[in-house]
Image 1: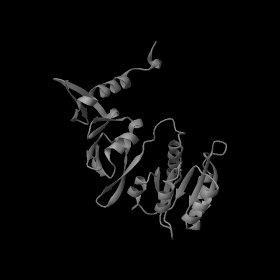
Image 2: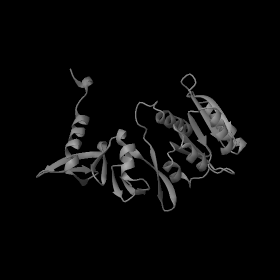
Image 3: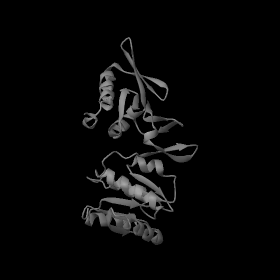
Image 4: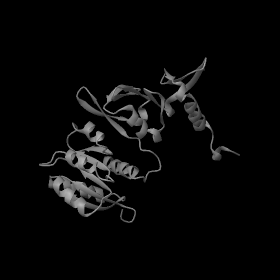
Amino acid sequence: MTADRLIVLVVDDERPALDELRWLLERDGRIGTVVTSDSATEALRVLQERSVDAVFLDIRMPGLTGVDLARVLSRFRTPPPVVFVTAYDDHAVEAFELGAVDYVLKPVRDDRLAEAVRRVVGARGGGSAPADDDIAVELGGVTRFVPRSSVRYVEAQGDYARLHTPSGSHLVRVPLTALEEDWKDAGFVRIHRSLLVALQHVEEVRMDAGRCTVVVGGIELGVSRRHTRELRDLLVRRARPGPSGRG
């Protein structure tokens, strides 16, 4: 970073879109330098010569696509955060599977781009709290985005996971073990080999004849004996007032 501001690379084969995104980013006080490239191949040459803090990347480009470039970047020793900026929403699931921190649709709005920059800062360790990530889900052939904060619990289904929210459930192509690792800092804990729960959505903890269950969104979920003590300890710590609450 330059003077604690980000150096970003913008990649788009359409010059008007490239210039507009550069202009929008340069207006953001968190951005120090904007480097541009009109192809994924040229972007790789740029990255061989200098390091950047993030890459803002179009998807549909001649030759190497944005998805191809993101796959290459994911193999870097320290991959830069990637934000896809595209007019098409049909690659959202694939983008997030590649570890993209955001997926912004054109035409780009100022507030939406500011949120993408916030996520980049958070991904680089500059945020004070975990970001409320959006999860891309497919429903009836349409890609939609579900806020992680709305997920009450997650259920394993083979190599997939089902997210349970107040509006319904959504199947995502991510194993439960991966979500457990990625979401632990956001308050998700394993209560069973096939279940994660969001601590903020736990309404009750019940003990009956040594058997522990939790109530989440009015639904009772069983807690395995192995995870019972850990869960109760976590809930007690969350409920305990901090030093500021003492006289």
